[in-house]
Length: 151
Ligand code: AMP
Image (cartoon, rainbow, N blue to C red; front, side):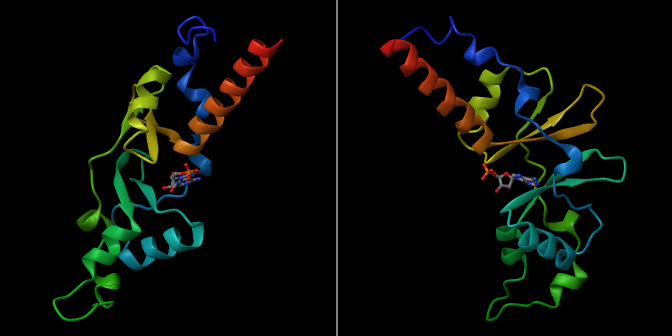
């Protein structure tokens, strides 16, 4: 099998895996948790980015964080969904890269993060790279390699 470095697989452009910002489900920091939960459940995603009105990345919010935030000592407290905002519950510990970051770095971040957020140098949110896009690319790449080996 040819060497990975020779094929430049690890230097592929990061933006070729991008789901562009306009196709990314997101919420805003001052949305309440009820709205965020609706977006998460309707979209089917486990976690989504939090973007401010200027489309700058502020954090991530997940179904697990929302459910955790409404757990009382003896009961679930759904009334909190309308009272608390996304910014009170979201995490700002984001796996983020710049659009020029090499694919190798994105690949290594995807081990621990289901999606990677991409920004440009001005800090504008460009979109996300979900782990499935990376796996689909690597799957195609290794199939091609196997075909070459057999021919
Ligand atoms: P996948 O690898 O396709 O299963 O996606 C991994 C995660 O990326 C999902 O669970 C979501 O948290 C996030 N994700 C994927 N696509 C989108 C999207 N269009 N909008 C928001 N989040 C997304």
